[in-house]
Structure formats: C-alpha cells, structure tokens
Image (cartoon, rainbow, N blue to C red; front, side, top):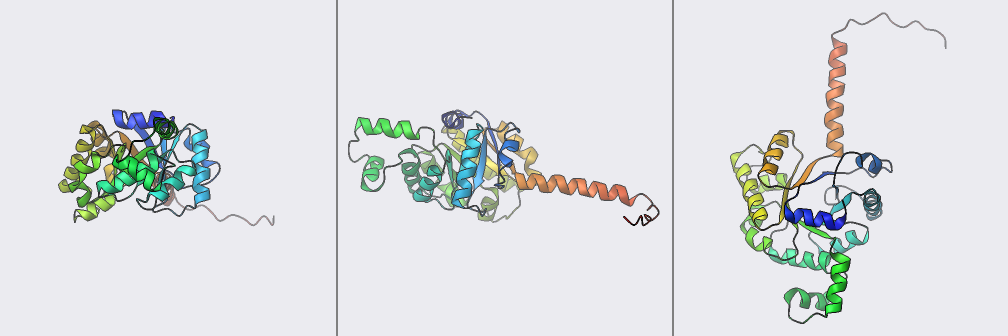
Amino acid sequence: MKDIEFVKALRSGRHVFGTLIISAAPKWPGVVATLGLDFVFIDTEHIALDRSQVSQMCNSYRGLGLTPVVRIPSPDPYEACMALDGGASGIIAPYVETPDQVRKLVGAVKYKPLKGARLQQLLENTKTTETELLKYLDKNNSGNALIVNIESVPAMDALDEILAVDGLDAILIGPHDLSCSLGIPEQYDNPEFHKAVEYIITKARSKNIGAGIHVTYPSGFEKEIEWAQQGANLILHSADIIAFQFSMSREITAIKEALSTRKEGPPLKNTNI
C-alpha cells in the first residue's frame, strides 16, 4: 500500500491490515510480503532494534509495497523525525495523554523539516506562512501518517481534545497499559476493559480518525473481529514472534503426544559408521 493511500484509508474508515515485525533477518520481508498485509509495525519502544536496523527494515518493506510504521521510544518530535529520515512512512507515538503532545508530533510528522520558532508560529497560526512553503511541506509530508497510542485513563479523559488536533490520522489502543491504568491488569475479558476499548474506538471514528487496538493475547482474536465490525479499521494483529511461538508450541506438543502413545521400538544397532 502506498503511503498516501494508507493515510487516506486510516481517515476514511477503510480496513488496513498489519502485524508487528521484530525480526530484522534479510529474508523476512520477502516472506511477510506474501501475507496480504497493508503495513508492518516496527516497534522501537519495547524491541531492541538500532537505528540502522530500523532503516533497513523500513526501506525493504517500502520496496515491497508495504507501509512501514515505526513506534518511537517516546512521544518525542525529534525521535519522530529520525524515524522518518530512516525510511518510516508512519509514526506511532506511545503513551500520549495531552493534545499538546499531539500538536508537537504533528509538527514533526506533517511539517518536516521545519523546527524551532518557525514551526511554532505555523502550529499556533501566529504568523502567515508563505504559500510556496506550505506547498513544499504538503508535497513532502502528505504520505506521513501520525498515529498515537491511547493507553491510559488520563488519555481517555482528554480524548476529545486529542482527537481535535489537526494532523492526527489515527489512534491505537495499547491493551496492556490500558488495562493497568484501569486497575485491572491483563484482565482483557473484563467488561470494564471492553467498555473502555469501545468508547475509544467509537469516539475516534466519529471524528473520522482511524482507530485500532494491538491484539496480542489469545483470547482477543474473536473480540478483535467484533471491534472491527464496530468501526475499528486499523487492524494490527499479533506479531511474527507470537505466531512462531503459538504455532511451534502447538505442533511440538502434538508430536510429543503422538509419540507418547506408541511403544518404543528396539534400539538401533551399531553399524560402525
């Protein structure tokens, strides 16, 4: 999916499908490209990937037609610029709780390379910006997507103000941190957790802002489909390492169970080879 198409899809409500990729193996992008995904999520908040690895991953996936979206370590505009310079097409900023944080990220993602006082003037609309400059900024940044993590009660309390910031393309719910902030850690089947997720998704989509939740826990698969049917369109499912763990665990267990039901055969003879 092309960058600009990805941004438009987020806002229009069209479903976009992706997964978390942590492997930087050179052969991995070619395999991932066969899965029918629209984007890949590369996480530098919780995964130990250096800047060079992230840049190589971003450019590999872009070359294969997948939109690379990078979660930066903190909601820092300079971190966002670094990821974009490395080849990211979208930025996910973790644990955002205020509209001011979003505005600063908009400056980094939508008005790159402006910084400092000139950028502040544009964001606050305190000085007329030259038409030629605005055209330049739009041309160079229209394909950059800005997504923020909503994963706390304070973020929910400020959700209307956050969603009102011009330049925000989507929100992504972080289920683990949200459950902890709600005081019900990892209780993903708790009605209070489901109510919070539905509230965030409904609010975002009512403002034509993309919405999704990163589901990595086994019990969330069917609920993930239900939330998508209710309006979530940023479908970020599982991760390469989780798929490997579940699949390998299931198959190894099946092999062990099958072999344990059979009688052991005679010992092999020494062939002196």
